[in-house]
Image (tube, rainbow over all chains, first blue to last red; front, side):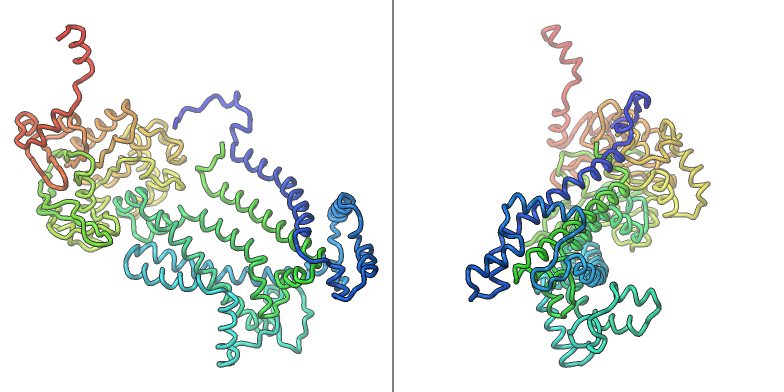
Length: 351
Length: 270
């Protein structure tokens, strides 16, 4: 710790702006991560049991038929050639076509990814809002009855699988009470499955409130199921980081100076905000695939459901497309996360 | 000014309560500096946190009182306590980097402490903060005000903490080992600074320390604690000149001799 500042002229810009240098290095790493991601998604497919040709043709296919399909799919080429072809297609933005539907993978992703993003964002909204409320309340009343009660609720929620909560929700709110629509997708059955991407946000933006209302109704149960389960994870994290923040000497000094409890809690929350933001990013990344079973339960037609069906059919381009998309989104998200954390904290200098 | 009597605090564990301090009684009269001494774990910190209502969730005062300004701080409600803390009683903690908020500018922290007890415009906050930083001899107060805690040296940070604690000119200041976390070279400066601020306003000081030399130099009265109880209390000259309690004798004997006296002995062969 020193207040002395060396002559600025003698120091390089990187030393004078360690944060900027860190940000640049962090961005420069992205292409390397992308190369690793692409290669991993290529290699990953060989660890999946099953032969796509056999899956396509069925168990009674002759070896000649299997060989012919393998040739069609390019699976008879040497590995190295396939790797190069894979990269040259990838770099042109060509993710191939599904073995089964012959749909270009990229257009499938364009169809399914917006559905998943809407589901994740709405679920995270519930998870973050409810989780923070529970966690902060618990931390404030540490070791007293509200903390114990909320801790119990959180543990109970955390131990319920999201799809199970979804099924219970369907049974109670659709079957028994009739408050929620049938779990048949994003809109009532007569609306079909073709709709513009970002149904909820889009219809709200366009002022199409009848579509918005219908879409929101169909989103309620899956969003609540995911939101409730993940709010438990959030509550635990918030309880921990706020609990630590509230017992620091900094909080003690603030109280000793007579600051209002409201202010004290707000600063403790600000002190633990990077943990909370980091957790949002991690949950977003994990929900990209983690929501797949709930998507399937509600026939949500999202990325997870699409990838799950791809995995079951050994639809190699679909699996690769999913791994690359999810990986790309996670990489971008974590890059943004690091830059946001860097910008938020005056202490972070990464020297 | 501050009268503590019979103060007893327990910490809750899974099975039972652990008594951290028991039947603590002492006075801090107006204009007097009182040293609260004792080894680590003797209950000094718990005592002042009980008085200020800053015990952790597991701690609870189960008996006794702490009268200040005609108010029993132990039984005071939250808003009473809040209006006393910072305004009538200033608190200086051990580690300045722990005390200051790392993500707020120093100016913002001055604004927070000022506005905890009165309304004031941004310009006035700035003027008051600058004046106070100068009064605690902070170099380059404008730059310090714009900056953050981590840009300060330990000594400078503790000066900022002292300025914050004294913002409302509290008649009583409680300092919890205010120099333990600092370099030896600045410890004296900080103690002189606190001493100067106290005597200038004819205020009272409760100085928690394990350094008997500090007590001898800066305090008029001393309270000696051991294992959660007060073992001896009185004027510094009396207690140090003629310690009654064996523990006080031990403490005094444990003070290492000044290095020059030892060196002198070696030279003379005494």
